[in-house]
Length: 383
Image (tube, rainbow, N blue to C red; front, top):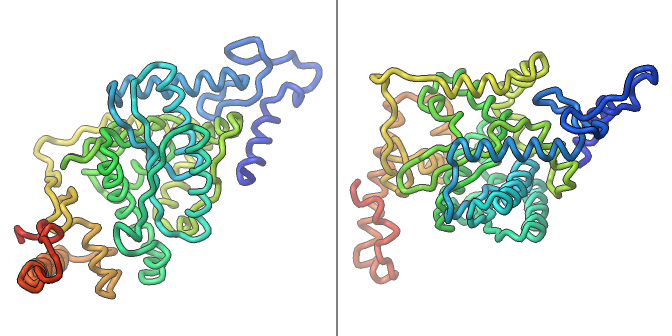
């Protein structure tokens, strides 16, 4: 955990009683008589390690209970990457499930995007977590789901738009993986920093539809997909690092190779500046987003299903299929960036027409000779 050790040492030194002049009285933990070992970034309280564990776990439990995230007997797929957030989430859910008798069937679900030197190492850490926590792990790959790896996508589309492809593909892959596991809920490791950044991004983009739900603890996508849950939505990233450090959890600490080029980086820089000036700013951003109410006559996208793959979509063809069409046709930037509504509709209509033509060819006599049952083409029947 080299990237975090310097920060943690400074945190500990700042909170350590030995760092104070001898003439000052000895400080004590805010909740007990022990010596404080750290200062909580979220509250500024000087606490001992045990009280920090208690407070962090109690706050997570309160988030789960107050949001009514889970019900007894549910199967919960934990979106795991091997990083600090998902590792802490898996550890907490297992601990709280046993402590408070949630009655949950927990499973680890990972997506291998195909990023050499990054995802393969993080999956190694995740496999060690599988053994230590005793939770079954299932891994899905972009190669199997889409026929592409992210390294190949970046070579074809460039680094400016890589997060657009990965974000769309990963979200759909997690939903499909959770569906394969027959999970009732999909728990993700989004923390308070992530949620605040997403709120700012949606404000900057003027995306009212996403802004209306991005701060929710439980999000119902519809279309038969499992609801998404964010048990760590009020947990500060710094405290997650401290919790993982003191618990000696095994996680992979390197950032994604393609992340520096992401648009989210601008929102992250703004949120970090606000946090430095006022630590409570993260919670205030989230709480403000939770209380936003839109006019009843405001137009929101109506969800339907993609005619090509059957995934939930507000358009006749989902974004993943549009992106894949661009990649497979040799024009990966076709569906990235600003495009007129007319050209977008033309692309979707062309895709539906091509799908219908392919279905007719595949399911004809030639298709029968190839052993085609027509099941792969059924989604295009309505086109």
